[in-house]
Length: 102
Ligand code: HEC
Image (cartoon, rainbow, N blue to C red; front, top):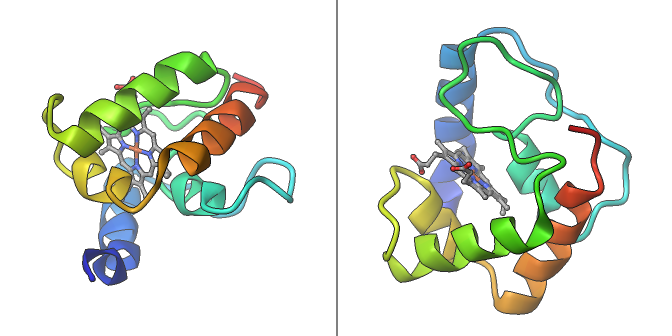
């Protein structure tokens, strides 16, 4: 049930990152992708603590998500988020982010 807490956390992180457009990217990404863009916005945000993933290689995004999920790679929030997605969903979301403009 951790995921229920995420909107509040996302809002807090976004406030720390300064003004941001909530909805971005072309509509119709795969299921789950819109839950990522709340934090990983496609717009460049100055001084954001959240790394940009739009335009990154899909394989890299998949690797990160698997390592966050297994706990092999330390994270503040991504471990909890990654646990909510299976491999198929992660691959679809990664492919979609890779196709977004950097
Ligand atoms: C609550 C805000 C939030 C949400 C929602 C979120 N992320 Fe993240 N993401 C972060 C933060 C913060 C980091 C830095 C690592 C950490 O502290 O967890 C990160 C790191 C990453 C990284 C590693 C990038 C790098 O260069 O280090 C990837 C890949 C990633 N997230 C993918 C995703 C995907 C895919 C989703 C949607 C399923 C998602 N994130 C949802 C906040 C978020």
